[in-house]
Length: 221
Image (tube, rainbow, N blue to C red):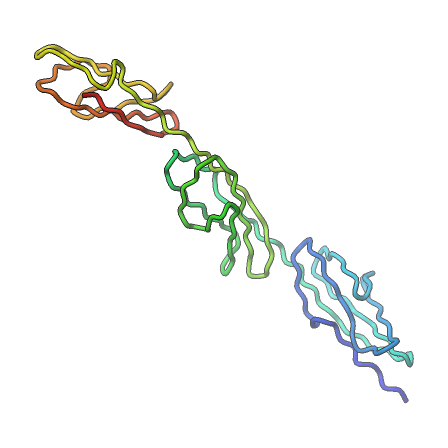
């Protein structure tokens, strides 16, 4: 009497795979000249992509024609939904911090462009950054975020940085360069384009802020 072969599944009877990824199931134990036949229309040792979690049974037949079976349970894990965050406008020279979400507890994030998750950096040009999130099952997904670097406005004082005035006479300081929708804020309690009478020689600094919220300064003596 010939003993039945002891059939097993290479890699174990419980296997996991991420949705959309291939898996290979191979039977073992039928010996030299043995063969394996799988349920579910799959072939021994040939990769396939399962669409849902399923169990597959392999029948192993040895050289004596004796057969046994083994079962592999394949769990298909759904990849995480990764979020890179909203697009970020930033002024030249300012820092920005990008943080991914969606990988869940124990998950991790890897960014393009040499940046690290949750660590501030100073972008030099407008760039799209991609984050790859990996959950505890090893499943991954990606998302993109656009970081727009806006140039600083070039602020100047109409009439030049040095302006003489006779004692007791009014003076009007007006800045330019913030563009349409921009604004100007002066030191010394004066207002842009509004005349005042200086009591002594002084320097006044204007901060011009453009429509993107980016600022630069200029000084009038």
